[in-house]
Amino acid sequence: MTLIELIDYLLNPERLENLYEEENLNTESDAIIIYMKYALDLECDVVLFEMEETEDEIIFEKDGIQYFQLFPVEYAIELIESDLDLKGKGYSNLEIAERLLEYRVKDA
Image (cartoon, rainbow, N blue to C red):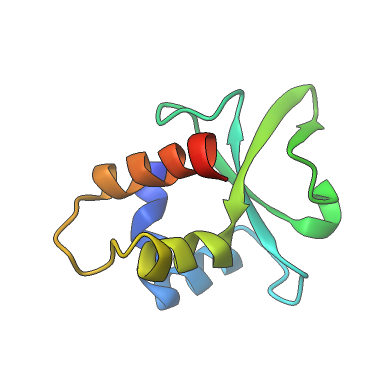
């Protein structure tokens, strides 16, 4: 799944819960964190990890693959809904994903 595809889940709490179940993620974790495989790039796949597994590392390696932290899921949702004010404004998933990446690279 790409970040563009993940946006649908971030905008819909019920779908996000279903995704957590499908991925066997522990919702009691301190945080579920969005990582991108290989680089912070729209073309890269995203993977969700529990904070306990990654120890909140910015760059995390598993099975020889490097993952780069984007944001914890809850923070990404907060950015979309409040800080960046993108929810319900008619922005496409691509535009929201681009803005999240831009924020991560330039502002965070």
